[in-house]
Length: 342
Picture (tube, rainbow, N blue to C red):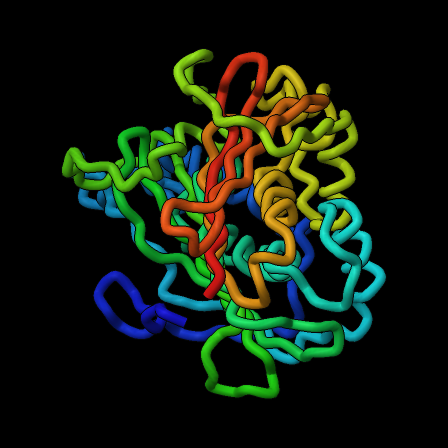
């Protein structure tokens, strides 16, 4: 895998904390809600003992620097032998072939709780609630199959300015336990935006071209983008978010119902970004091969129920595929990405 070893912003290797098992997302979201409340209170009342985190202790008025945890979480001995039924439910929902090979999107589902555990740590400086999902970059170096025993790692890195706040990468890696010390067979980098936080601004945001808000409320004006000819159309029912939440464990209220989504400012429930990305990956089909790089940039939320036009086309040099999904009535782009065989 073409990636440097995980390190702090000062270049020091991260400490590795080994957890006994992969955590459950339900308990993590509860911790994340509490941590988000503490961060909000600390920013509102920086001088308050214990929670005051917004200003330097000396009271000199300067913002305290944002620092990522110097730790990587690890879980070893993760079995997959009992995952066949769950895997096949995922494959049917995402329109993947039903086999014993774990697609890249399913490996994201497997590793996502460990990355979330990093984001709900007490020393993680950004709130989980309100985090906007901007983009993903994934490499799958070969097939992972039911029966493989895995090691999963996750950490945060590359905190950097964004014109609306700061963005951060959550990195997760999956290795086969039978190949200790070997390169990861799967690596995913998820990029998130935390609005309202600040780092020294250079005027050059590191922002994917299509990413104007991801799961957030920022949307490109209708009619500003000319779509290609569609190669497919998805009719997504009102229960799409609940169905993906059942197989992924990601039961964020914005995805589950119109009522719960309205509490967070959405008119209706919205589809998970990784559902749409993984569905597009499935549309690429067997031509992607057993090893590939898969990227996605999120532009605007997909309201449920809804219809998405999708185009999967060969890329410019003929080595891979580009895909894009949009609202056909309003010509509003929802996501775009690429799949390139390795």
